[in-house]
Image 1 (cartoon, rainbow, N blue to C red):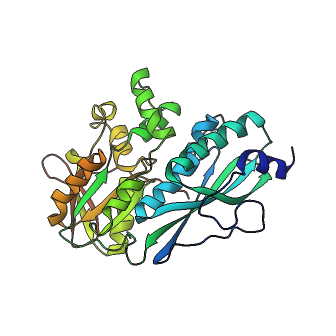
Image 2: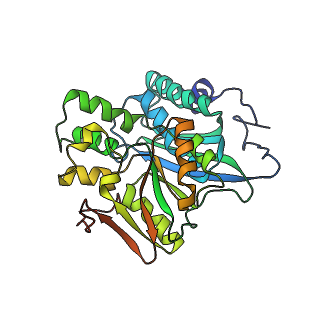
Length: 316
């Protein structure tokens, strides 16, 4: 199968909201008047971000989901994406399932695939996603202020716990692993939440490298510090019993792969955020507050600072 046959067979479809899509030297896109373009790129590398024998349908889902999560963190509506594939071989069965998983999620969020590239080599998947957000309304990392509350969506740590099981670092009961594996392989991008938070929150980020590491980016960009109440962190039943162990604490604070949103908001928005939680049927939890200073302190049940083993995933 040639490169162009591969693209035609698995990645070329009629696209909406596109002046010119797959098949030319570049796509032509028309941004909605009054909006600005939000652009983000994520790369998934075999052996680093996923196992080489990962289910291709789930991998197709995750390849797009991690990019949609970036759009959510900006309060942007996702519109278009490009996909670059480095493949060891042109495997029909693998490509069929991968593209099915990718497009199932793309269709759910109205994302058009408008271009990309393919080449032979070690398995590597890269998406550039583009979205629209009204001028001046994008969520940023730099707006947190002392007195703001710190919130997170969903539950933290399950994906990292599932990965630890797969790496042989811990053994989970079959039922617990099955529950946690969904968080690892099929993260749910919080696009609707990001849109709902526009005009309400002071800063936001998606949690890809662990709560402490990603919250740290907000703190650095905003020039503030944070206090986190460890007992308030939302976790599943699978993880709750492990919170007195280093492994459990690492998963919830620094494990990564959560793809939930962490955001800050003035205390006066507390009840409105609870209303958004109810409206979206999505757990939103206040986990601490922004304070003056630098860094982040995690407080135990006695409100004493905890000694932390790690602060988040580092690529280098």
